[in-house]
Image 1 (tube, helix red, strand yellow):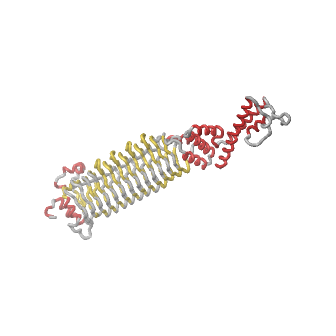
Image 2 (cartoon, one colour):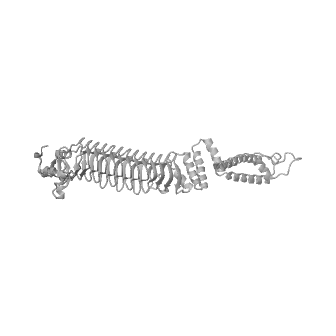
Image 3 (cartoon, one colour):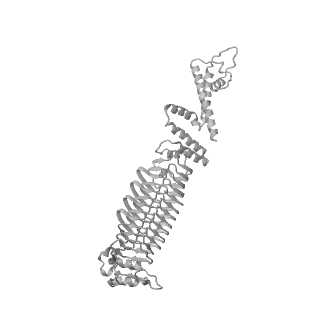
Length: 539
């Protein structure tokens, strides 16, 4: 370009470049220097984008022994800063500058890039490689920030950045690769969708205190995101719109402590098939309006929902279906408002609180080794009876096994008895009648000695009745002495012969009583045998 056409401010920048010196065009008045006032800045603060491009692509040789760089503050940049496919070997550092047009850095190879506290009508850096840091701290970007396919070898700093593209992509960072940390904190805000699907972060991903707004769709779309260390969505983090972390991987822990998510009638947090190497904290004031789902997630440590508020009255408020976790802490601040789906989850330790149980649960297939607190069987049965799918045998069997593993055999038997009783309600009338008899007589085999008590009572009843009126003898010449006790016992026993029943034959009412004792003895005897064999098989 013709250097004779440079303005005084451009000449200052041109001359400062070989030594990497800074050029500050600001006035010193903070109110006037605010980038919101950039449209009022005069010619003395204007720099053409073509000047910046010329310097960055080698129009001026660096001074020997110095590190050349473009360092500019307080300027209004006019025209198109187009570095598409360019090879830029010097740093670019712009502070407090305002752009009339969105810079184009697509598929460029850049040294470190600092655009701090700048105003940009968009930034297109698709496929860009930055050998160093990309620093956008405090900038305001409208029209979208495009970093899809970009590769940054250092830090991506978006602390305090304001992104605005309502109804579109506020941040488009599909398949972004950052080898160090990504900062979206200290007042970071986005109106529009923040996209990070398939992105890879070599350090930490920090959304601490960020505010995301895209109620019509996804506030954060980060499916298949891969973060080597921790992910922080806490410290006042809020999102209007869905948070999608489906299939993501976190090498450290994931924190939503105190976060507030809102997607009424939709999924507030979708973390299906998420893999976390340590813990997940959705706790200490975490609030979600809409469904929270960790279906198929794998958590090496703890998934904590302690002190959380979950609300989705019309459907599932919490789903941990098929979750694999060492520990699930389900002690929410209040009862979950909506269905809590724990079906087919596999958890070593389930810690909950009866005061926070939801009205509706799904528990079929849930596997756990230990409950804390175990509570009494009667209390835990109230937990099982909240299952919206009705009777299913597995939840009872798992609960009974948990009690037995704690040495609480009586509680385990109580649960299995309740299982048999609840199953009876699903059967037809004939089976219900048989089941009712089994329950009354022997407690479905879990109380086998109850039938023995009935037998003793029947024996006492017959002894008293036949003591008051002896039945007539069939053969007076060859008959043993009548004994009411042994006669009644002879009637009760389904096998064997004590010599009383075949000699004495009651008549009238007493014959009916004798027949009743025979039938009742047969039923009770078989019930005792069945109950005893079931008890022995369980042992």
